[in-house]
Image 1: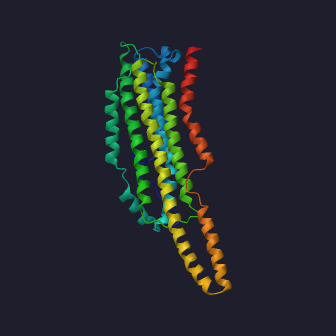
Image 2: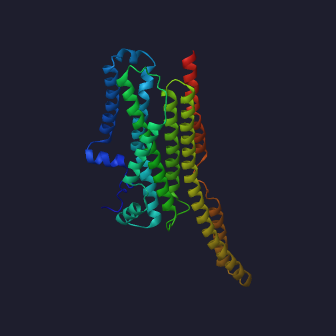
Image 3: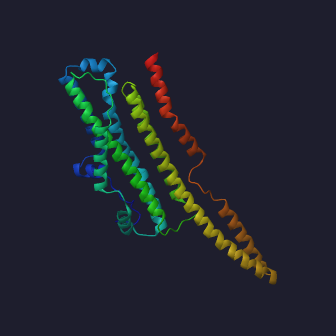
Length: 333
């Protein structure tokens, strides 16, 4: 493998493995999943003889909730992979390892395991069984209700799996922070990669919330109660992932600046003492150079995000609220 080749897909997810084993492009796999969900929905409605009713009433939005959000989660796995690999690539120069050795380190540090992913899926399925949403579908439509039941279980399995994978990858990055790193303060390429990854994860959670609010069934008290719990958990998790990633980056930058400033100030202290004893012009130039270097170190930002990132983060928080308001207006007027 060439030294400048990009790091492979470590940490590989269950989604990555499925695409590899099926030997199909990701785009084809995504289309196949979407078609399967839609076929199951239409098939259940056809068996109940309500296809025309589904297409002309609010049933359609209700029945599209599970396949849409499930497909969205798979889509995120595909589109978030480049940001994950970008962070992995950005850390390797700081650890000073070749590609193969670095891959072995990632495999050893990664908390993302197939067993963990399968357990997350199982936990999600159990949550889907336990949470009693009211879908407001008449009982005589048995196939449609069966479709809603099974697809809801799968939806919660996908949600918990998506949350687990994002938290596990975040934990891997945290473990990389605690390796012996040699960082260039004036060209910290990992900072932008971490900021983009953290913002992308937050936007992904926000998108899931907006879709859930738009497609969710009629707002009975039970539905509002459980939807509020789900939204609160997702909001807290998105905030945790963003803040945790940013704080880890901040701590690394602060610690690196502290070490560099200690070196500079030690040299300055020694040079000042020698400068008092001699009138060496070159020594005075060295002092000026150390002072300029000290100023440059102090000017290095200590946070990975910039004003644009903050604006995007704040704006994203209003997307679910705007979706909810738009739905209320559309339903009442």
